[in-house]
Image (cartoon, rainbow, N blue to C red; front, side, top):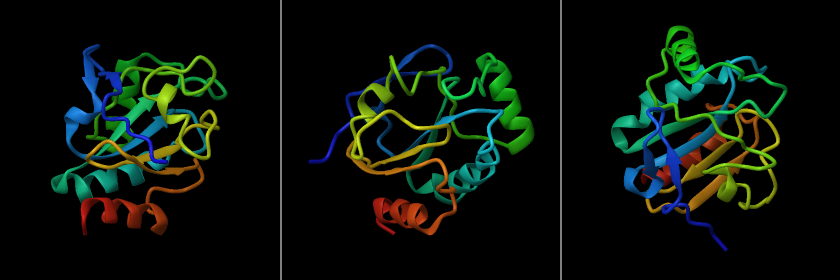
Length: 158
């Protein structure tokens, strides 16, 4: 059974509510952290944004401090870190909890098979334009991994 997250409402960096389905794009939802062994994945995520953004794709980054306290900063600090160090142009959202007492979108995404809380920073969920969750990728799957790239291209109708 596939899960649809089109009606899930998240909080933008400016504090405004945003319904995922209103974006009308193929989305890659990622919980991010600035002080993690996987932080260098920001570079690969930005490359995905540049490669597919004009085709209706967007990375959505959700800073999260749930894993090893690796994202302790305030949102403005995080945004500056991402743009300065990795040239990030994709949207960063308000900080979330991805495990335990989770917040949107993870309260829903953690039900995607294999169900369970996000295990670490930089876990990725690929979502189709219609809000259907297509795939879940663990943290060790790099943004340029062929399985992930292939899934994005398939979702975009490449």
